[in-house]
Image (tube, rainbow, N blue to C red; front, top):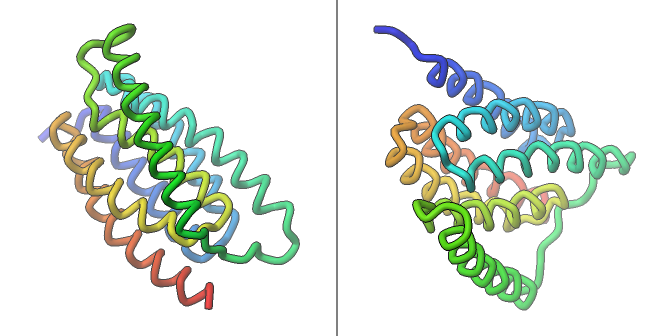
Length: 186
């Protein structure tokens, strides 16, 4: 059995993103370094698979890793976990849905008619979840549970089976992250 370059890179992403999630749950800023490394590799993989939304998302993750490092470094004490009001959640979700539909139709008509709406949905809501994560908003983990399952479907359909397995593992890790941060919030 021969391992392809893409499979080797997927395995690299698994290692670096598992380390990212481990340190994120522990609220250790080193997580952002591992997030940066996995995102750079992800840009290459998704470029090869022609998943435009995922390419954009991983470029964003790369930038957010720098931003997260900066935000978490600004605080000498660990930044506290926070909760958003229901109103803020509803507005964020509705804005996200609007952005998904406008983006999908713009991209489908102007750039790439083969774009998948699931790819656009994942991209937009991962932007939101990552921003919430950088600011230690507890519900970021709930977004990740849903997004990881959605990514699992997209990646499996795109013949990225190792990535699909990783998303299944992430969904489980996201439950652990939510429970850990929730106990830290109290």
